[in-house]
Length: 422
Image: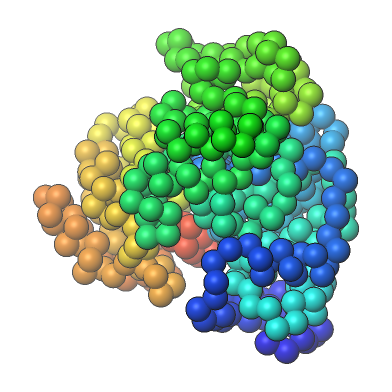
């Protein structure tokens, strides 16, 4: 891929999406070599956030709390919903096209003949962008797993795992123990190791013990408890001092809030009374996001694995509509456990409408329809989110709708209907 200083951000994306390094060796050596060539250095604190679900929510909560303190913050998340710029935020604002193109050019110039994947290339570009900004705090969402993920070339001050569930089993292993081992690769000797979910794989505990990380584990050093009308979060600091904060029925995942609160506390901030109010105002696009199209209430959610689908179903139960009165518009990737995803939502969804987002990995209409038939549910095929003429009159007849599945599905829906959503 020849260096071209005239490429736009959109042209760079197409170039990066076409990267095919072939059979490259696993590991971090290649991306670390380019990182060293770029002479990237940071003076601020680094927080890595891994986990099967809830990573984006954790990053958003921690980022918001730190910004509320007046701190300078860089946040890296993936994938994006509508535009690549979403992946890199500084001061709560998306990186500009110019910032990103400049970083892409520098990475391309530095890598020489070293092969990089799309994610490795873009991760290095965002690291370079943050190095130029030098924020006080940098929060990096781990893309996949942890041990071999590109962000793991960094030396984090705090490492967070929101939880472990089945997803990407072809890459990470067939069960929670294998997946936990991969994710725990972000922990560091002598540094805080946060695990926010109740079920902690033995491989995660072993990693913490083997390397001498400092554990902050759910039900041990940290916890959240349902107390009926509210949730009580309990968080220790490095000295073992406990602070509590109470929240009323937050829509964001409780484990994500606990993870963010723990990292926030370990960075030296107290859980003051205003923290709950700040968190209640965090709205994350595509995570149980409420909008209205015409007169139809819409919920947007990127639930695309069984754990996330179960969480979505539980949230739908809290909504005013009775079970089965809501319609679904969904499209999902073929490599996901589609049956386990759909079956969690069958009792909450009445009518199903299937779409295929514009990406090669998407599951076909035939595959999704057969899964639903096996579950005793019929579905209507819309083909793709872009068929506005087909979708709009369908949505208009719905009492309410949930658009869920892959980031691509929710992102395409926002692309087509975003300016009409209230």
